[in-house]
Amino acid sequence: MAASDGGGLFGRVSLPERKWLLETLRDETVGGILLLISAAIALIWANSSWGDVYQTISDTVVGYAPWHLNLTLSQWAADGLLAIFFFVAGIELRYEFQRGTLANPRKAAVPIAAAIGGMAVPAIIYAIVNTTQPAGEPIGWGIPMATDIAFALAVLAVVGRSLPIALRAFLLSLAVVDDLGAILVIAIFYSHGFNATAFAISVGLICLYGLLQWLRVKGWPLYLVIAVTAWGFMHASGIHATVAGVAVGLLTRVVPDPGEEESPGERAEHVVRPISAGFAVPAFAFFAAGVDLRGTDVVATATTPIAIGVILGLVLGKPIGVIGTAWLMARFTRASLSSSIRWRDVLTVGLLAGIGFTVSLLISELAFPTDAFLLNSAKLSVLLASLISAVVAGIALLTRNRYYAQLQSEEEQDDDGDGVPDVYQGHGDAG
Image (cartoon, rainbow, N blue to C red; front, side, top):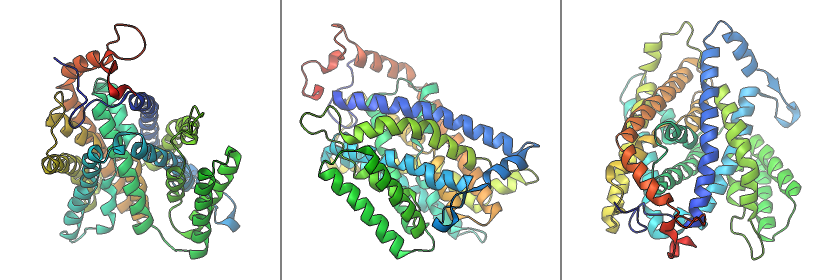
């Protein structure tokens, strides 16, 4: 059997992108495992005899009131720590568009379209369920749109370590485009009490950040002060503060200048990604996943139109949207799959994309901030849908693992011991 070739959809990625992807995916995998541990601890604690202690910790207010920063710890996790996560997502997205899978318009068309389809179909399914039922709540349509790359990679670490790097790149591309879509949805549809002055100041600071990057001004403390201040004014504006995080990430330069070993974006990512994956996202999961089901009719909570819409959206809508749109784009562009990839493999990625978790939990909190029952219903459905998607994707991976392992062995073969896989020797994609 020939190793995965570089031609067609989901063919071999370039050597520099392969190195970046492997490092990125390794960090996110560790973060995903920590995320699952944090969520499990929160869920168990919230439903134990010490559940009131968990709630007291979540509701503890910390911060400076005159600056509108007197937030609960759970709000700090959602507004503050997730801004770090979205900053990294912004850098990832810019890297993908300038140096990665999305840099080539022809190659970018399919993953971008698949990501859009993977957001649209779940939202449509949720909206249909909740607009046709008397007790439906259409406002939660954004909940099933997102993909949690860390959780998905944790699943791969357990049952799919040999998934071809090209499909991992596709999953990462889906996730980062999803993140951008989610932040736009949050900014437009889930923000409250708009303050134009604070927003203008935040935008001005973000533009200043971008200008300094363009002028090649050095000094990370300066950029840190600008970014944090922009975050503060964005929060005060009523727009969700994570918008500032992704905007600053998108404006961080990712292409090194002549003489630079690494771009500012790469250096920032090396420093910030471990903080995001190892602390920020697990801490958010700890505060968001603690759904208190004590004294609750779990069946009733899990069968509301909200819950049904979220579960159907993530478990069915995500894979249908991803593979359906990817297939239509391939037909439209007359592109063929790489010789080593089958559409069932693309479907597996779509199943993994049904793991919503982090951003889905965030949008749940924004959609139902005052109704505990609806919020618990939304959160419980996100947990159930993510678990179902993980199990189904895991089964799909297990049926192909022997084939994937053979592909991986051929892709990583290095007979001359120079540290570069033999499949890249003498090829243009090694550069």
